[in-house]
Length: 433
Image 1 (tube, rainbow, N blue to C red):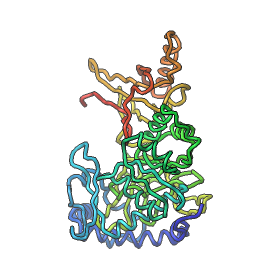
Image 2 (cartoon, rainbow, N blue to C red):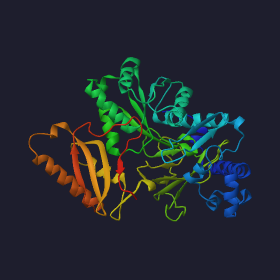
Image 3 (cartoon, one colour):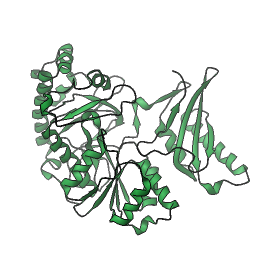
Image 4 (tube, rainbow, N blue to C red):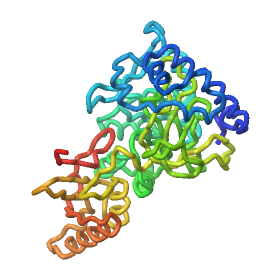
């Protein structure tokens, strides 16, 4: 596949470092000069923009987290007057005030460029017809990818979320070749399509660009098998601008970070210490070109690792591993640290288990109880209970062997677990902690 912008995507490492340092100095100066939050935060840390002489000096700066962004709701993090803001987006705000992000006209141009790179790297060309299933509105996911598809020259079908039957109809009637959405929605759409007798192998669809939630290797293979496509993964978050931070190329070994616009660090989530290349830790991102809302050392809570080895595709941009785990989605059950991704890996190793499951945590008589509800193939349900009991016991033993916890396994029929058009809900914590 051709590389969208070889000037930056294939830049020599020394040249990239020089560019990053120059942009970092400008970004810190902008934030310090025009943001009350960052002016106060840097003064409190005893750091001045003039103290940044090399990239490693970034570690002197304090971290930014969601609390700072919420405390400055709605426009307190902006560094330009409102008459220069041409668009705002926000998070869902399900845990309080939403996080608001703003864009100047230049920010939108850069955002489109970043998303065009990852779409092109995944395999999108001007000949494609792209079904956009991300939610439009205040959510950033659909918009960045939408304008990227237009810049590439492909045909965008801005259907948005919901109305699965409509998506299936358009796939058949419009000749859709590319699908963009969450992996869980792709599984749901394939289920509905199969029920309606649609043979995806007979459709021209060939490629899926997925984001918005973590996905396992097993789920990815499930999507590829059921829809007959190649599934790719991209990474982004609203706090630093939306999708476009990193994307997967055709080689499929890691996600290339658009380093000319985002400076990545990996830190120890407990100590905040910057970790060397190759070690797993929490991803921290600093924007390098944002005009409306610079973000310095944002703690993503996503666990991954960085590699700077050039990719076989020809890109020299560093890569991050697929993000499967977040530091803030960890459950502590009877003193044991449990990540949903661990449970998913266990479940998907069992034949007959579908990609749909729900982890339910409750507390009774002062003790935590772990229940895992999972859908299994309809063919496994019969008049004989023995096979189901054996499967429950086998899964419970696997869970205990990996997590050190005994879980109650509840097998349910296909379609029993709620489907969502956006991010899937995997955990129901009923404890009042």
